[in-house]
Image (cartoon, rainbow, N blue to C red; front, side, top):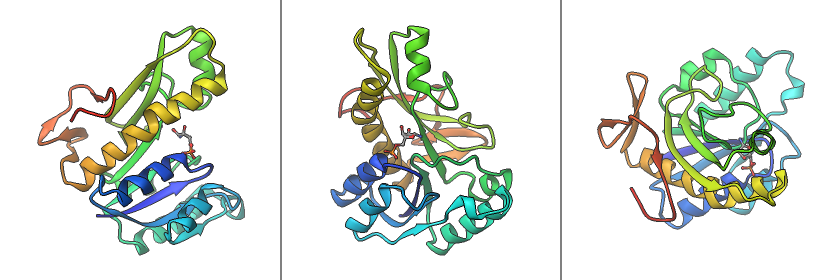
Length: 216
Ligand code: GRF
């Protein structure tokens, strides 16, 4: 399956997807990477992997609609079976989401439905939560609210800072669960059916929880 990955920053999730494709853990290849920021370090990761990398600087656009139209066109050119948002820091228009519905996935650094939006690590620490993690979900027009696919959790440590916690969520959870969800999708095991995430033909009552490297 051809994949398009959208980024705005470091691209560590992108790197995990690149590695998983290279190692055959995802039955697909990344056909194009698109960044909303010219200075996104993730672009260099795409280039290093020989993946065509494009930049669509959002500040050059007068409005969200025009940006999303060009973005959709740049994605469609690559004819992807799936579009993976990986730290793509843009709110998408309903028309864009509708166009890619069912093949648009996102990773969010919280145990959704807790903490949609920004600054999730800080909010978890402020709330005194015992655990934290990340979630992959289908994208709908509901911000960080689409059907959940897979989650991974880690304990919050007493000495965690926002930075330390973010790092552990990235390395121990995000970089593991996103390649896994992408692999399911590329293999035709995962789909959005009647507004619900289905894995192996069954609607998920709750997101799959991944612990360690094994599992589904
Ligand atoms: C990740 O924490 C992702 O979940 C969030 O933004 C961050 C992007 O990091 N949406 P990277 O660009 O993948 O390194």
